[in-house]
Length: 456
Image 1 (cartoon, rainbow, N blue to C red):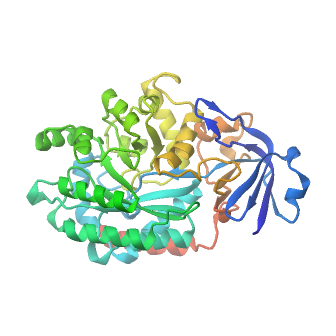
Image 2: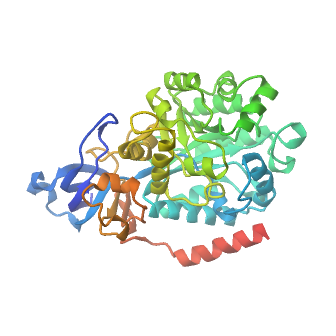
Image 3: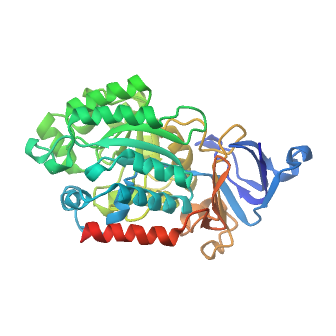
């Protein structure tokens, strides 16, 4: 297999060790890659000469290198509808956008996914999940999965669903929901067609009924049974807003996590998006059962949902990661910016060591946390035997001038740029700050045409 040597790295942040006792950054580092995996990581002066023989060499002088970032919650089709209902809360925002999203087509689903994933790749993301829960006009999960394969990003596609329309007490319009037998049948189909459980797999599937206010309890139960029978994970929105809390209490007599638990939706194969209103008792329960949480600070602020108790969740042993969320409630897909946002918003709650996160904590959420939430033991850190998923950021960027003395802190305290290099399974996705093999202007033109048609 082809070997690649990355050398003269200014600073390498391996993200190994524990969050409370991390391995230190390595100066003047080198990384040796063979095929899809890392085979040597360390100080370049310690690299055995014979290991680098015959390898293709890339000089990363002046760059900081770290593991590729992991995005655990997104709605890629929403890149088509940015900046709509800009002053609305969640429920009003959804009611405004549902009719527009029902104009989605297979071509628009593909192009929106490709554009959103391209945006993520330029921000340092190497692995992303996506929650597609609307299937109008022949749209299928295959459309977004194809986009990820064409770009080369590692992709956890979740087969989302909505089955509880307005006439039955749900939030979405009736024409936005599907029959539950059709949902389960297609869920089984996409698992069979795309799920790859092998190490370094580029495509995995999860099942993701949308939310307590858009699916029935029966669908939640049946989806959990199907997922566990097929060995795939489960994902949904939970405890995002006070409106959701009130809805669950009024309809089910239970708070959101209690409701999810009553349907079999807790365990290490489950991750929830948001978790803004998880109580201390909820946090303890989540830590005990092994559930994951995708923290989406930009979306939660944009929709005035609140601030998730991220530090308290971590202290309770909960697996916590980051999600940029849909680009209609974040309006961007910059994952390193999301790490910065998580760091800054945590400090509204307190100082580092109390409620707040440190710079390293924020990077942990974006790497190791993401790997753990998605059930991956092959990504999220730079060490021999792990996937060759890594990014390089140029410390000569204007925004880092004056911060080169502390590259780790610079990544989350300074304004984040685009990455110089992005590699997935040893394959270059971004080189020299540009996407490899993608005609971005043509994609933007197609994407914007879909958007104009849908918004009207």
